[in-house]
Image 1 (cartoon, rainbow, N blue to C red):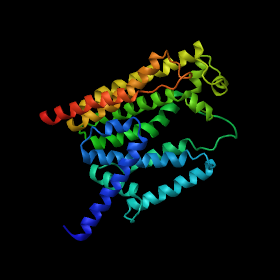
Image 2 (cartoon, rainbow, N blue to C red):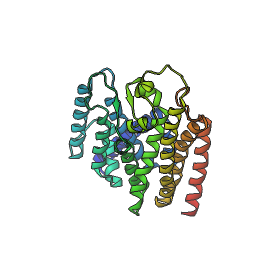
Image 3 (tube, helix red, strand yellow):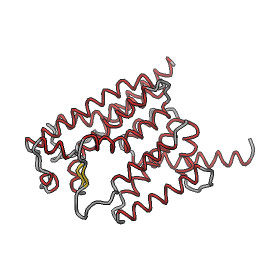
Image 4 (cartoon, rainbow, N blue to C red):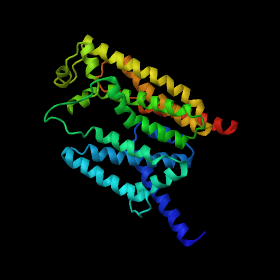
Length: 308
């Protein structure tokens, strides 16, 4: 091995180590699934996560105006494109992601779509007007860009050969994002964002301002509950796609996929068990439950290797 090659390998391993640290610290639900992956795939998925995290952090920086945040994201994206075209970089996340995209054949267009999703939250709005989505189709497009794209990147890392996996990964991403949206209704409203489609609010007789100006912890009205039930039912139908996706990915990646789906689905079940009250308390899956799901996933990983 040449001296230069060993330096590059060392830089790359150090870059992946940075990404693993970011994922361990930030990826509350995802990290449990990452642990159930073989190391090369785990490294790649931690790199993609660190890339997403950086984009999210730039988009969510409340200390900057929306135009400033857009500019920061555009500069960051320009740097990333330079790296894709062969520029050297000292950014460990860019180094790791470039290696992961090459190693697992991840289309760079997917990462562009991911950034497009993040910038959707930064579209200039009328001063003081809340961020909203008119129809479920509009919301689906948002979910596609911020979550389905992640699913499509993941299946490249997980490994698949049947093209049917792509649509199923897209719908699994929508299931996860709808779960996040339901969990965060109160938090998003406090930030002047309502992701529940306005058409659905109107159909259930829910006033937009009742969500935006509600006293903290006030339980849902019958109309609000019916609205949340409907969105949760849509999420449930998309979770069926996750079940169909599982057998289509490489056997050694299935335990990680299973862990991820179980944790997210458990979150939706928690909302359902709380009688759809997403206002009084933020739904979460306990560390114990996540650890238990992971333990089953790791056991499945052992069996996958025995029978591979």
